[in-house]
Length: 93
Image 1 (cartoon, helix red, strand yellow):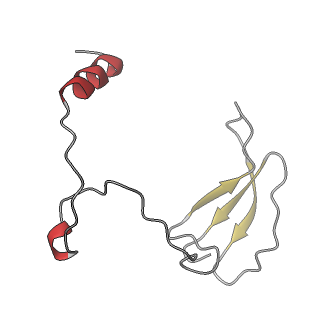
Image 2 (cartoon, rainbow, N blue to C red):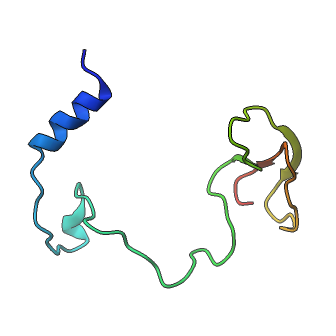
């Protein structure tokens, strides 16, 4: 087995960069973008989580956080996490 570093080196030495081309949305299936697409507006226009998860006040090296809040869809967005805290966030919140 080879290392990740060695595998990346082999890939970078053998990859062929293709030129950019414009295609219709219908033809785009299975392709990759050559550049990021940046929207001029936030979509949606409010903070939204697409799935359940956790937010936490990150501290380098820390692995344990106290879950101090549950944020559900419709809850006010006025909560600020403190050091050592995490919040459970539900879909749509």
